[in-house]
Length: 215
Image 1 (tube, rainbow, N blue to C red):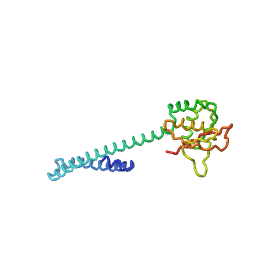
Image 2 (cartoon, rainbow, N blue to C red; image 1 turned 180 degrees about the vertical axis):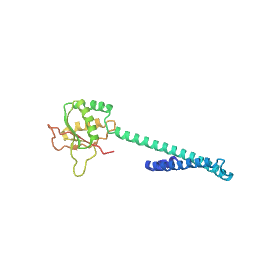
Image 3 (cartoon, rainbow, N blue to C red; image 1 turned 120 degrees about the vertical axis):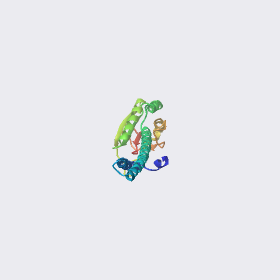
Image 4 (cartoon, rainbow, N blue to C red; image 1 turned 45 degrees about the vertical axis):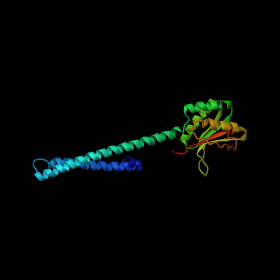
């Protein structure tokens, strides 16, 4: 039974549950009819058939009840597993307080540096993660220019992930950013430092682009 439950989708299980519920109703009707034909007004043969119908219907009613409860248990277990998986994915897409504190300690030596942080327009989850990263950077004394939600994807679409851009002169700072933000392994930061193109604001050539693939 467990192997069967694991081999089909939740929608299929819901369909089977509905079918079993309908059969349960039929079995309940059988119980009522069997009891009715057991009354003294009917002949012994009819009463005997009513008795048989009652026994069979009661057995089927019990069988369908057990099956429905088993399906409910399987569906509930699967939904809990799906929720746990989703919570794990979401947890890996935010900067926890402990991770933020660790990032602050790692980046304190770079206090006074200028940089920007950006994300694509319409990517609310990336903007949320970006704000968490920005708060940690500012606690470390880094001046962060906010471009979250302002970027527009090119013809090839967004490059999902967390990417750091920098000029060669600031690669030490960029490497520290990669290590600090991805220190606990929950946030996957690309270890490939992308070359900075232009100064976006006040000579800040180092930046972080946050783009999260929809769940």
